[in-house]
Structures are given as C-alpha cells and as structure tokens.
Length: 296
Ligand code: A3P
Image 1: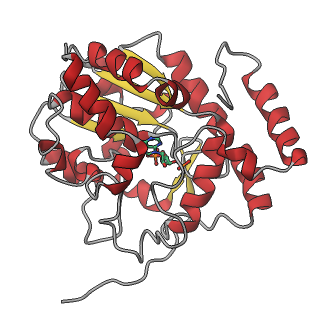
Image 2: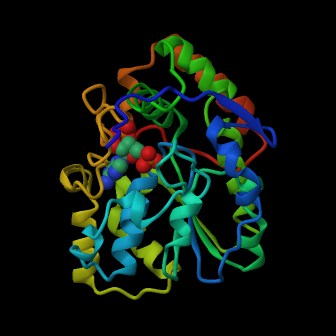
Image 3: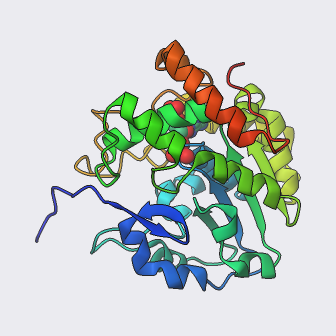
C-alpha cells in the first residue's frame, strides 16, 4: 500500500488567542464541546514539561504497578492527546478517546482557560505538571528539531526569542503555567513540578496516588519509582516514542528521551541569553506566587 515517508512541517494558527499547529483547527469546535465523564482524568502540561513521565506514572498507579499491563500499547495510545489532529490517515485525539473504555485518562497541552468546560462541570480531576522554563525551553528546542511536524525552530538564538514571546505551538510558557496555577484553586487539580519528582520521585508518586484515591503498598511504590525512572523509561519502547517512524520523529537528530535532567539549560544558554530569560521571567511572573527551581 501507500506509505508516507515525508511530512511537511506544520504552520501555527491562532485559536482563541493562542498559537496552535494549524491542523488543530479542524477539530477545534469539537474539542471545545467535548463531553467529559465524571471519572475522566486529565493530565495537562506545557509541551516538554514531563508529560510522558506523568502519563507513565499515572498508568502504573492506576494499574497497581503492573508492568506488563502498562506495556499493552505505546503511551500515546494508552492516554490519548485531546486536541491533536494528525495528517490523514492517522487518528485524531478525539478518534482515539472515543475508543477508550472508562475510566479514561486524557492528555492535553491546552492552557487552563481553553480546557473544555465539560471537565469542570463534571468535577473531573486533573494533574498539571510544570517544569522550569529554561529546561523546558531547551527540551522544546530539541523536540522541534526532531519532530518533523513542528514548525522549524530556527537557530538556537532565534528560538529563545520565539519561546519567550510565545510564538510557539501552545503559546507562551509564562501564560500557560500561570493559567493553571490560578486555575488549580477552583477545581480538583494537583499541581506538580518536574523538579520535585526528580528530587524525590517516591514522595511525589505517593502524593499523586493519594490524589487518585489509591493506597499503594511500599513495594508497589518502589516498583513504580524504578519503572518510571529516566533510564528505564528510555529503554521501554512503550514509553520512549521509538515506535513513531523516523520520518516523523528523527531520533538521530535528538531522542525523545533526551537528557531528563534539571539544569541541563546551563549547557546551552550564554550569560547574555540567561539574562534575557531572567528579565522575561521576572516581568511575567511578578504578579504570581508561582516560583520555579532552575537547579538542584
Ligand atoms: P529533556 O528533553 O530535557 O530530556 P514531554 O513528555 O512533556 O514531551 O517532556 C519530555 C521531557 O521529559 C524530555 O526532557 C524527557 O527526557 C523528559 N522525561 C521523560 N521521561 C522522564 C523521566 N522518567 N525522568 C525524567 N525526565 C523524563
């Protein structure tokens, strides 16, 4: 049969004031009118904040640490991506969600104000994962180099400004983290930090299980910590995105599981670039109580 071997990089389009990959607009109305079920669980994040990590942790927690069960399918099929629209004939996020058996777990990168109302009307739980903006930026830059559907990131120097100005898919990192930080107090939302999980995975996984109403034994918790570590996930084809064909995700350019560190930004930012970032950071987060750790 016909095999696609090349894709065109997508362009950005503004939807309700936020830039998205242009294919997203095809399902935009349907996404806004999405019908949630009360036991739906949303995993939300800005791209490259550690979404896949939390997806794997959640699946392990919900399946009581059953490793084989969590290898039933690639993570992007186990926990579909609400607003994503892929080039035909690939299924959209909505197509995949329609095939899930409840209780459903759904991934989204939508900023808080664009999450379909139905989730809050149904009083659904959500987990938000946030990552310090410098590491998040470095990770997104490498992802845009390797993911042939993302807009071309340009040079590193150009990319920094694009990111700081919010001219990337899913918009401004600052707006995104702030939107969920404010939103978390109104609903059943667990707000997690990448740096905290890295620092003490057991503590954070325990917090997450309690949020989901799961009382797991010490043995199961230890097993989940082990199987969701960077080293083990990097080798797990059902978690590391190696099942995506290389014309889409070119892992020779940069693997999906790239470094998994806190502070890797220091190997990329010049002193001047760091000062520019800090200036945006202080200006944009001045009016919130939200703070990040850039190193540990
Ligand atoms: P790096 O590019 O800094 O390595 P997302 O899932 O939101 O796309 O985020 C991807 C980032 O999370 C990548 O960051 C990836 O390596 C990191 N990541 C994935 N699994 C991880 C794990 N188990 N521990 C630490 N970092 C992880």
